[in-house]
Amino acid sequence: MSLLVSAPSTVPAGDLREEGRPADRLATMLRRGELELPPPGQGATGVRWARLSAWGRESLPLARLAEGHTDAVAILRESGAEPVPGARYGVWAARSGGTGAELAGAAGSWVLRGRVRFCSGAPDLERALVVAAAPGGSRIVDLDLSRPGVRRHADSWHAAGMRASDTLDVDLDDLAVTDLVGEPGFYTERPGFWWGGAGVAAVWLGGAAGLVDELRERLREKADPHQLAHLGELHAGLEAVDALLTRTADVIDADPKSPHRTAVWTARAAAERLCRSVLDVAPRVAGVAALAGGLADRLADLGMYVRQHHGERDLAALGEAVLGEAVLGEAVLGEAGRAVPGEER
Image (cartoon, rainbow, N blue to C red):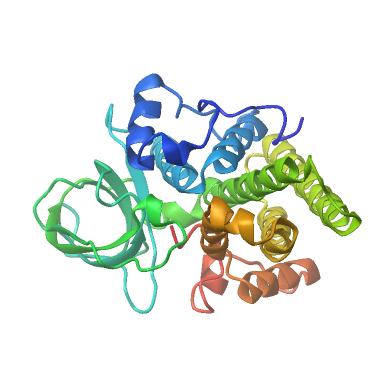
């Protein structure tokens, strides 16, 4: 199968940016059941990632919100819990520059506090899985975002890229918490943590494919040999990453007890490199008119979103895995730049 071919987008044809805010579109998709995906690691991981890729191909801000919701649902179900019916979810786990959620107290009387950065969908989501540092290991709180003490900072995102995903900083002001999701360390210790990181790479692939789609349409009437060469280069890159992610999905389904860290790091690295190629080549192929006509927005979205890859830190982790010098995981990498997929959500 192919992620880019086998599962077409469930959204209507056309540019989703013209169909309303991504948060509103997410609510419509949830109501229609379009956000129900096959669970990862149970035989249809490739189908799951194909849907994620299709959303990225249409609109990266929408895909960002949809990926967060579907990941939250997968996390809850892995823990034996169920999402609140009708609620749009996110996963807020970032620990950046000394920020992050913390749990103080003890079982039955936890208090949740701290500032969490990069909270996509903050103005509109009903609930979020907040990953908080706690004694004995990180814990997950299924948080009702309508509670007093959840403060959103409307001026905390200044970038043009992914602006439509409504990503904000959120302060949590000493919220009383009783029920937690999973055991200490569950968030990062479950195999699905790593599989989710590859699912994000599938969204990156879709974002890159969406840009190449636009280039292809613009070149149909007239293209010089240089433009055609660039188009061929990008097409080959898409196919290669598509094949690698498809193989990674098959490996996960064949052995769902393993996190497959090296395979995930490899797929993410390949997808990130593809996106960098698209970001470099697409403006030169398209020209100023196309950039002024909206292509620049897509480029900005992709450039921002793909920075969930940690660059050389992730590549160093992959190199270490390839050499087999250490067993990699949160214990090894947690203090060395947090080079693990899915942390900055």
